[in-house]
Length: 306
Ligand code: PSU
Ligand code: MN
Image (tube, rainbow, N blue to C red):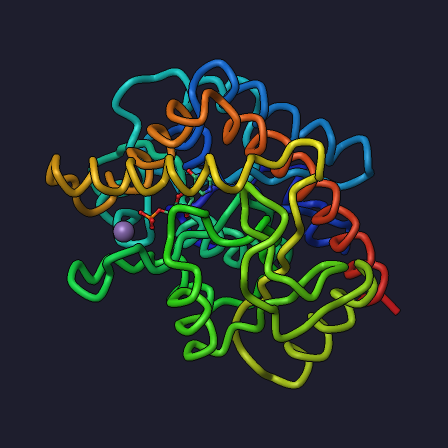
């Protein structure tokens, strides 16, 4: 930790005393979900964590400070203020220098989480290799940073708008184990299943905690990617979803959208084209991932103390 970083007292105390803590991203708040769902969901996940006896640690950059542990007022500020940046790993230094504010992506959030000593992180879906990346080279920094920091990332799969097969290949190359939580099929973010198998399956949070302790205890570096299927009643219709993604990706190409604007644009358009089905799935899967992430944090903190 350093002068550029501010960790809330609640998070600091919990980390120091070995209590369970879960980190949350905020790019989903600033760029991933429409208002007012963005602020409502972000506050709700904090409340879910609290009710499970886990300290929530939302990460962000606010007025040039790297922040871990946000108040409801700060969540509202990030979710309603126009011009707040989407803060990827590459943007952190510049936001500090210019005293800017940003919602942190998975890559940036896990960086801040480990700087604060947190080992479990919850998101909706990770970034990855985009469709057409063989010509655009659009590959999310989420993958590279996950290969470097020791944190368990809980998600519902990679975002459905990506090339799932290519993303699985890059995850393998980078040495990031993809773990199915109670499933041997890779979850599809907005849907419960993809056409891909996961290399590892675990049955519960205790299994994940043992994996974390074993891998990092042995001195091996990098994330574990825990993939949890979206609850069945809230998944999107796979055929409707595929059609919407195809159209949204084409539109993004035609409009010349590139770089960090690609993911928010496609997610937003897919939401419109599916008549809100992906929004419903997104809200549900984040809540569900939060519960699983909190369970893992509790198992992990009780195991490391022994
Ligand atoms: N998952 C969601 N909504 C989002 C994102 C993920 O349900 O908005 C964000 C995450 O913060 C992820 C980022 O890190 O999108 C990836 O963006 P890019 O593809 O530009 O790296
Ligand atoms: Mn990208």
